[in-house]
Length: 139
Image 1 (cartoon, one colour):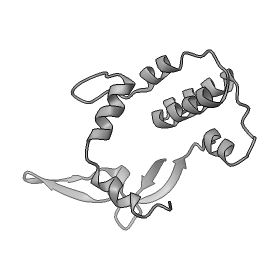
Image 2 (tube, helix red, strand yellow; image 1 turned 180 degrees about the vertical axis):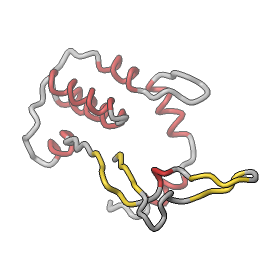
Image 3 (spheres, rainbow, N blue to C red; image 1 turned 180 degrees about the horizontal axis):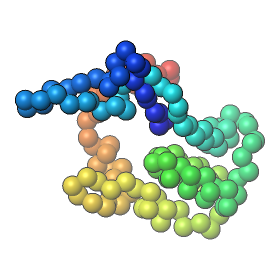
């Protein structure tokens, strides 16, 4: 969620920082009262389908529109999940593997890799933070 913050009169410039030999105003967007914010709520058709809800009409056009919205908001994982759900449970001639390749994030310092390689490398890396969360998941 993008928010706009404004310092109150009690600290009119927000927080200060000291760099080198002088003071400067620290990032004004990090501190102060939240006055405005923008949020976009996107439905989760996969969750809805798995829970017996039928709000989303599963067809090529709607799936591609939803995948595009997900991608625009940097939710490539949701877009791929949506496409995989559609590919597995509905009849379609969409080029799914091509879409997976397009939705695979670039690797910083390396560039583009295939979706298959991205998943393989990702799964081979340790992720201690996620292991901590997994202990609390209900099985």
